[in-house]
Length: 94
Image 1 (cartoon, rainbow, N blue to C red):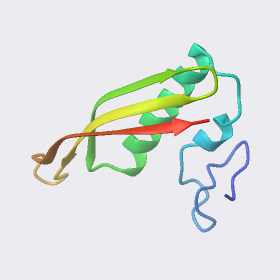
Image 2: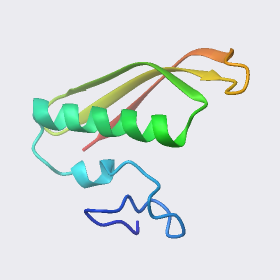
Image 3: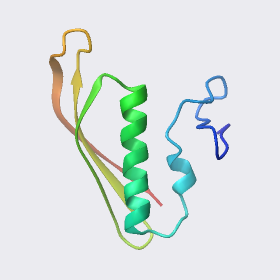
Image 4: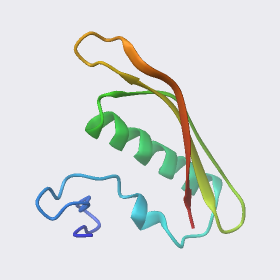
């Protein structure tokens, strides 16, 4: 990673790309951390993956693990129609 506290740093040749979620690893789990992770994920997906239409993003966690559950559709950005509906994935930080 080529990031710092001010740059996303997911790609060395495109330092603004990313979500800064990696900076939240190894922090104490709390409702504030969950909301920060959720908002960073929504912001990054909205900015960098316009083909994804978010349906639901939830953050939940236990003592040491934060889980982000994302429900989304893949859409055709030119026509606005849904190409792949009802996808869901979970990402764990911790």
